[in-house]
Length: 421
Image (cartoon, rainbow, N blue to C red):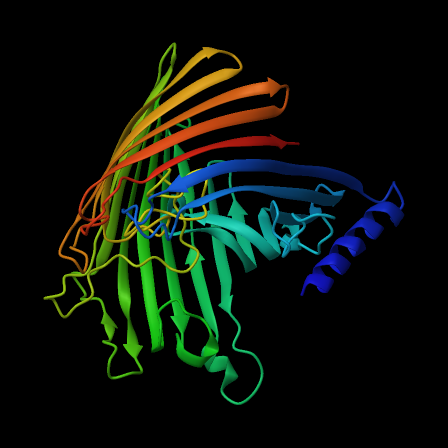
C-alpha cells in the first residue's frame, strides 16, 4: 500500500510537470504542524501510568489541484505523519521513511447546475455529530441561487471477491439539502442518512456494530443556523432508528423502538464583542437503559467525529481522551460549555473554556459524572503565516471518570506550531 501511495504521488507530479501549460492551471496548497505535549493521569489515577504520554509529532499535508477549465478539476491531497524518534515513520535518525498517505483524490466537475465529486473525498453532515471524515464514494449536488441539494453515496466497506462476498458490503446513502432565507439570516439544513449492510460484522472486518447480521439504520436530522449582526446561533437535532440483528447468542439484537429510538440535541452560539467573543454550547445524546429491551442510545455511523473539549473530547492533541469519555463519537453524554476569547492585539488571542460533562446512563461502575474541565489556549502569530498555540487543560475528575484508589485529575500541557498555504 505504501508503494502504491508513493507511485500515486509521483504520477500526479509527473502530470503536473508534463502537461502543456496551456492545457491546465496548477494549484498547490498545504498544511504543516508540529506538536509537543504531555498528557498525565488520563486513566483517572496516578498509579498505573497506563496512559501517561509525552511526545513530539509532525503532520504535513500537501495539496495539488489540476484545473482543466471552470467545469473540471482533479483534486489530490497527501498526508505524512511522524512521531519524533519513532522508527516506524520518518521520525527517527536518518528521517527516511515511506509514510505518504493518499487523503483525497477525486474529480470535481459541473454538468450545468449539477456538481459532481467522484472519488476519495471529505464530507461533513450534522456538524460532525453525524459524519465528518474522508471516504470513497460520490457527492452529486444540484445548486440553485439560495439552495443546494447534495446526494451522497459512501462506500463504507467492500466485501471483496468470492461467493456471497457482496453480503459483507456496507453503504451509506444520504441527502443533505440546505436553504438560505431572509437574505442569509437563516440557513435551514434537513438531512437524512441510511446505512445498509447485509452482514454488518464478523469475518468481514467491518467492526462498526460488532458481530451482527443485517443492519438497516437511519438518521433524520436538522441543522439550523441564525446569523445576526454581532452574534450567531446554531441548533442540531438527529433521530437514530433502525435495527441490526445479532449473529451470536451472547449478543442482543440492536432494535430501535419506532417511537423511542436514539437521539441527539445540540445548541450553541457566540456573541462578538469589542475585545473578542463569548461563546457556548450544550449537547445531549441518549444512552442505553440496561432495563429496557429496546435500543435507546444514539449510535453515530462510522465516520462520526465532533471535537469538543481538550481532554474529554480530543481537542488539539487528539491521540487519546480521559477514561470513559466518548471522545469525538458523541453518545451517552450530556455536556455544557461556556467560554470567551480575548484579542489584546492583532497577533494574539487568548481563549478560556469551561466544560461540564456527565454520562446519560451510568457506566459499569454505576457512576455518571465525568467532571469539570478548564481549557486555556493562547495563540500568537510569530511571523506572518506561522502560528504558535500554547495549551493547558485540567479535568477536575468525578467518579464517572474513575472511582477507585489512587485517583488523580487528568491534565495536559502542550504547544503547536502550524502554517498553511
